[in-house]
Image (cartoon, rainbow, N blue to C red; front, top):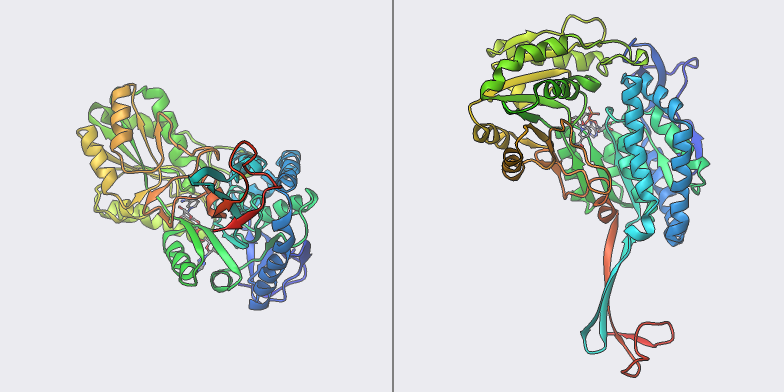
Length: 499
Ligand code: NAD
């Protein structure tokens, strides 16, 4: 928190289609993680500002709900073109406030853009169903209707993709939206809402507030909010889920992870080791789908020295230089990661590659072997460029280890055997499985399907299933009056009476 100074740019709220300066007296510095230079000040909104944002969205809902789906879809056709036109600016903004390399920053925007493209198909996605003659002259049909005001609370690590997991589908489906981006990375979200305005979104349909726990609690408690989507850490996610559902809201909370890869001795050694290094250390390990544990089975254990060699060659530096890894998000994040590395060493792990010696918020790739399941560093999400190595005698033993872990976000197997891959995907208790793919995140015509400790609520997160999260099904059962025979059926000339 800091006193407001006039010289540094203040991040604005976006309410009713306009940028507004917060009246809050609590502001936080947003820093470039590569330099710790202050980029701007983000407000912790007042209770009144949260209420105004929700009331504005509620007011806009009345008209937006009645706007034909094909017209709503047109906003997203325009938005996808605008995002492509502004890709470089978005990536640079993201790289400066989050620390990702420019290539990773573009990837972040691209993965969000895919959801925007999916949202353009909303008329087909929200189609209802019908069964004729459920009884004599009685038909039942269902329609998908929007909910009202929906809220998105997002983490720092994907400042473009995760807001776009939420607002495009929610809004295309006829809802209005209040976004609360991470207070650590609010600027990319502000660029996105500006593009939404340029795309022709009516005022009040999308609004943005900023802040921390008080703002989140205010949104979870607000009686006009109907649904809350949360992505972030485990403790916060449980809090948000409990708080939102207590007041009767729909809630989905996507949480932390500990993703394991199994390396079989028949895998393609060179490709596997490079894939593992990219998945473990890319984005400095600050991905919920980052690979954090590699289980080498049998003779594959002889490859560990080569993995260390590949990881040692990865280059660390400011995101704008577009090397292999950028910094961690903050000095606190670095301290946390460094403490986990030390705790693993204290618990008996062997440090094969130590990345702690870097300046500022940087940590270079770190590899710890001889890790056991009872170590704190194994049980907790580290969220840094740290790979834990474990050994297993057999595939079965590796699967047992993965299934005993609290989390179930993603996992992968490296093997040339179809039979082994089939056995793994069938028996592993994890929602997203890669076969020779280290980070198996599906495109939005599927859904993000983390399991167990990595999710709270139903599996409706982004993409296909999110359409169901952001709509409610209404079924209508009708007796149709009129003559039996060819002229009976559903058309506007037939009188209808409900049962
Ligand atoms: P975080 O939980 O600290 O913050 C997430 C959001 O919650 C932010 O908007 C923040 O302002 C808010 N918040 C923080 N503390 C709060 C509190 N006490 N009460 C109410 N709201 C609060 O998470 P983060 O550090 O920004 O993000 C990293 C985490 O997100 C990691 O655990 C990562 O695994 C997880 N994540 C999960 C997925 C997934 O799909 N499962 C995707 C990306 C990130």
